[in-house]
Image (cartoon, rainbow, N blue to C red; front, side, top):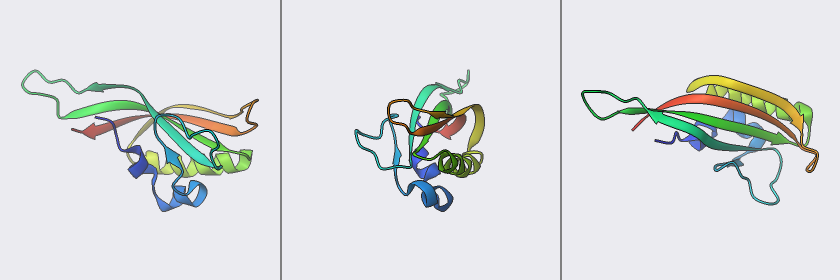
Length: 117
């Protein structure tokens, strides 16, 4: 199962920075309004059991926070982290990095999130 990342991140503390600009499939379109969040499932696996079909799955989800400002991307990432920490554990943190083409800043966080089928 793919965790419902939009619902997880669609919280007032995160919306204060990105509104409802939370996009799946790792892509926000050609001309996104900043700041925004993209997410995608990198990998996943069921919690296999010998006695029955799996009832829960684990997914590694990549969350990217994008902004035109380094300070704003940090603040938005902190808000997202505080919410995501309630649903999984962070395994990777990269950034902030500045994209040479768009001149925008990005922080990447990968989370391991369990979800019921």
